[in-house]
Image 1 (spheres, rainbow, N blue to C red):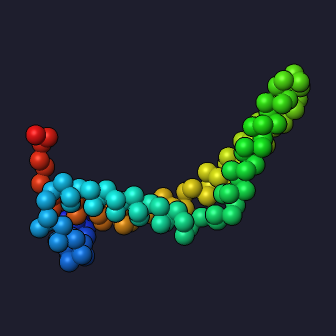
Image 2 (image 1 turned 180 degrees about the horizontal axis):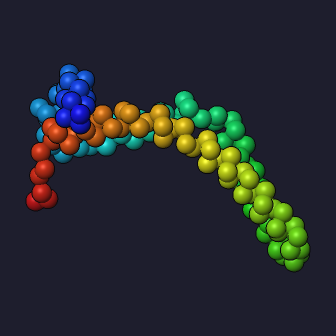
Image 3 (image 1 turned 45 degrees about the vertical axis):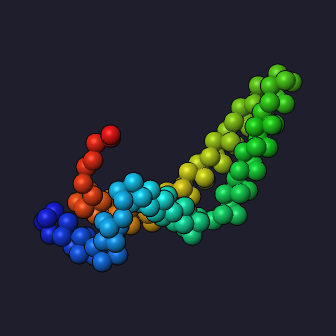
Length: 125
């Protein structure tokens, strides 16, 4: 079953990625690294609510400032409220970050399988 899956992935990836085998290995690894980073970045841009993440970032900065002010006033109740709110905002952010991982999983798995099967291991010089 895994062999069949492996052959299917290679059959799909070979036409698109075989040109990487004709260039120097250092350049190939650089292109694969940039490609992997691009997949993650692009999937994050298209699968998350960027406005919500921007507002969460602003809220976190403000809540941290409010927490510092409450600490200087030695208001423990306010510190606890601000930390609880910061935790809620962090949970919203974490839920948004799960979607890019799911969207990038398949392309990165295909790229990783192709690299594992087609690129030879070359130890450092």
